[in-house]
Image 1: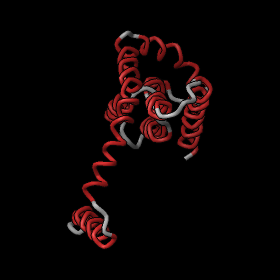
Image 2: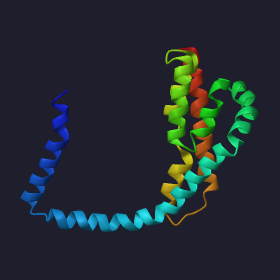
Image 3: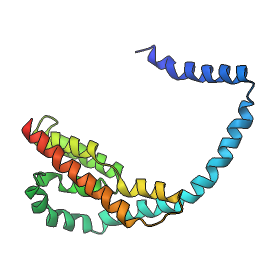
Image 4: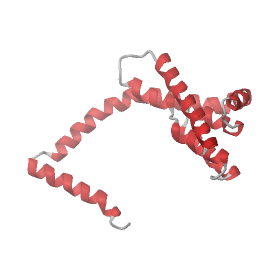
Length: 170
């Protein structure tokens, strides 16, 4: 294990040596890369701020609780345990919120339970769709978000359904 802690410093030294052999001006290359990153950060920031605010509003307004209660029977019909409804709804909005919910579910039901296994599969098989969409679409000129976001949400839902089915079979 102590050898793994040397991996990053050795990689860093290897890059420095390679740059020296190729006679690359490392500092100039680094600052040029930073200059290119700043406009990207500035263009992405409004989208990220909007997504973070909307996800917090979704939770604090009570809409999350209402939607969870309403959709629990629908999720149950598709084989998703009702205890995971909130996780399925939060994951497309907030990765950290989904992590907190996963932790609560695992504490309540255990990691080896059916619900715990399904929660882990739900968490691992889906993505924070709105965050990824905000980052991706901030850098492109194509701004028609509805279709790609709907496809991503449908794919997330299908992975959760099939993941729970596999957990039930296994």
